[in-house]
Structures are given as structure tokens and as C-alpha cells.
Image (tube, rainbow, N blue to C red; front, top):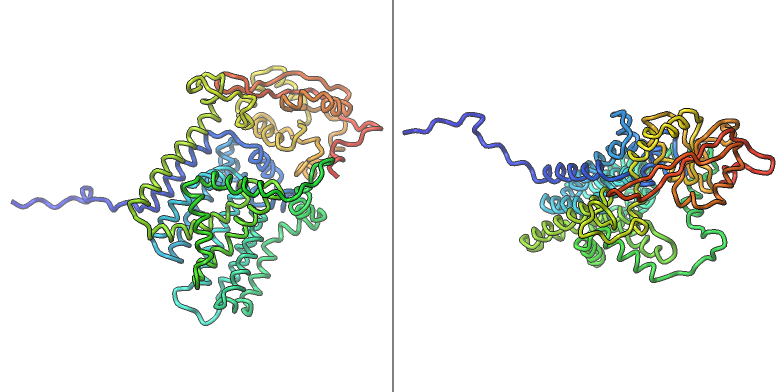
Length: 533
């Protein structure tokens, strides 16, 4: 008896490629984080970039404004999730480009391992793939540059001369710089590799290199055009001003303890099961002889990883600064890992994934519900961390801040009758505007010694004679000298309400709202903006 042939519906479907599962699974997980995690100060500040589109900005190039504004513009909704849509999409592309680079340089197995490693490292997931930061467009074009350079420097069959890809590299490195100034270090790394690798020195004699350099300068047009108009203030700030000590604080000498702190912190952010191997393969690869592929990766990676670690002995280093270097080093780690015991590698990746996802989930739950907070409605085992000593309370739920205005007739009326809103810290301005945006299009500005972008978005004399709301946090409200400083710029200046921010049923922060009428510049008082200059 013969069995009947299977119908098309009964035929087994082809297996889903592991690469696609990793990319989609990672996108879903990061989307969950992006949806629930309250916006950070920097993210909200970059949202203001998207509301004041320009060729460039005081503290960063232009691309972060475009990526942050992408979600709100296509959805019409301002939320912590929509401002992160650009980062979610770009990071998925960055992972794919990194995978393609590893496959080109090595093989499919190494590429899969590299993709898995880069998808799991927590600071990559969050810093590059969730938060809307300049790092997101930076790492996308960094990855595109690595792929293009890999194909140019390591073709399948040796060409007789350098190719058109050198011109494309000029554009890609320029776009990387428009993401973040780290892109200039990437460009210098490519030059360093070409100088130290004899087979590749011929690129300096190619007309494609001249075209690439020209296109690089042209791609940077938004950066240098804006800075020409503003006395190169961006570069001055990034290279000098931000590293100056506070007035009255003497410069300190070199501190080797700072280097150790940055080194250990980096391992923690990478997660130890990846941080330690990444440093290990960095030094192991340095002694590999005649391996031009490793030399290529090291030249675009070590200037950041080693450079910023050593700089930690002199200056305060932010966690994300060296991370693009470690991003490139995952290419070597993936290549090394394929020669290890595959049983051990599976356990390594699986256990790391379980630990990292569990840790991130616990952090997310604590930030949103206060599971370790004492007191708190949702605290595990009664909690142990008081809100006063908990840095996670710095993240603000803008929906609560928005409801504070809609639920209060006094605050709603004051908002409707005001011409502008101001605060005393540039990083609060973005949170306030995100909260108020669905309610009113009222402009938000900042009066402070550190104005950042506000110095170029608004001019103080445009508010003369106008009424305002002053919104600030509890800790600033408790500084009477600050309140009195603002009071002298208005005929009337009094507190009209507070908005408590709760987590787990407990107040963790309080916003204070003042009504200020008829803004004026008194004879003996200079504008609060003037201190910036």
C-alpha cells in the first residue's frame, strides 16, 4: 500500500537561520527595555536637538538629532519608546554589518560567534542598541566602515591596485564623525594600519585616496559649517573646556588608581565573561606575527580601549567612550572562539545570556517598580535601598510629570497662561519638554551657567515682558540662593505647586513649579544667559 504524496502545506518548512533568530530575538528584547525604561537626562536632551534642527550642535554632531527625532516624527507620539526607535533599528543593522565583516575576514562560524557575542554584551545592548545616544549612529557607520575597509584591504583575489572603495571609505568615516567625534580616531586607525602594513601602503599613492579625503571633508560639511559660524566652539569644548577643573579646584596629577578603576569598570560593563576574554585576546593578538587581519582590527580598536583606559588616570572617563574599540575586538574573539571546545562555547554563551538577561531584567524592574527599594509596595524581601541613596531615581517617568499638570487645575491654568518654561539645569529641559509636548507647544529654555545647546536655541531678550513657569527638582528648590537669583528677573515669582514622582507607592522625587510674571533685565542684573559666555 502506497502512501499518498504530501501536500504543499504538509511539507516541512526550511529552518530559520540562526543569524535571523539572534537579530530578531535581540530586537524584541531591546524593544522591551526601550518601552519600559524611563528616559535618561542625555536622551531627553537629545530630544531637544530634534526640536531645534541645525547643521550641528554645541556638544555633538548632527546625526543624534535625526535618529532621536525619527520615532516621534513617524508616529506623532513623544515617549521614551519612540525617541529610541532609531537606535533600535540602527543597532540591528550594526550587528548585521559586524557579522558580514567577520564572515568576510574569517568564515561563517566565526561570524556567528561574533554576532552572538556582540548581541549579548550588556553595554552594547543598552548603550548602542536601546538608548538614543550619539553612539547609535556612530557604531552603525563604524561597522559599515569596517566592512568596506575589510573588502578593500583583504579582497578575495588580490587586485592590481587600490579600488573605488577608498572613496566610499571617505564618506563612511565622515558619517561616523557626524555620529560622534570618535570617528576621527577610526580614520586615524585606518591610516595607521595602512602605514604599518607593507602590502597596503600603496593606498597613499592612489587617486582614490585623494578622492576619499575630499569626500570625507565634504561629508563633514554640517560639522565645520556650523562651527565656522560659532568660533569652533564644539571642538574647543570637546578637546579642552570639558576637561578643565571646576573653579577653585587645583589640577590633579596622574593617578594610576584611576586607570585600574576604568579598567575594572570596563570589564563590568562588558560583563566579566566577555570583558576578560576581550582584553586577553587584545594582548594575545598583538604578538601574532604576520597576521594583517588582526593588525587591521587592532589599529581601529586599541587606540580607544587602551587610550581611554590610560586617560582615566587623568580625567573622568564615561563608560561608553572606549566601547567602539571593544566592538571591533569582538571580531577577533569570535575568530578565537571557534577553535575552542564547542561544548564549552555553548555553555559560555548560554550561561552568559541567562546571567545578563536576568541582571538587566532585575535592573529594569527596580527602575520602574522599585523591587529593591525600602520602603516600596513591590520590594523583594522588604527592600534594602532607600530612595535617597538610589541613583536610579534620577530616571524620571515623564508620564507622571505630564499627569501632574493635567490633574492640577492650578498648574494647567498657569501653563496655559505662560509664554515659556525655564529650568536651572540643561539636562532637565528635555524631560520637561517631553512631558509637556502633548499638552502644549510652549517653548522650554534654561537659565544656567552651563547652557549647552540652549545658548544657541533661544536669546534672553526675546522673553522680555513675557510670563513663565520655572520648574525644578527638590534639591534645587532647597537652594534659596538659586531661587532668589531667578526672582530678581521677574516682577512676581512664587511657588504654585509641586508634582511628586512616585515609585512603588513612595515619593522618590519632587518637581517644584513656580509662576514668574513679566520677565525683565534689571539695571544691576545681567541676563542669566550671559554667564555662559
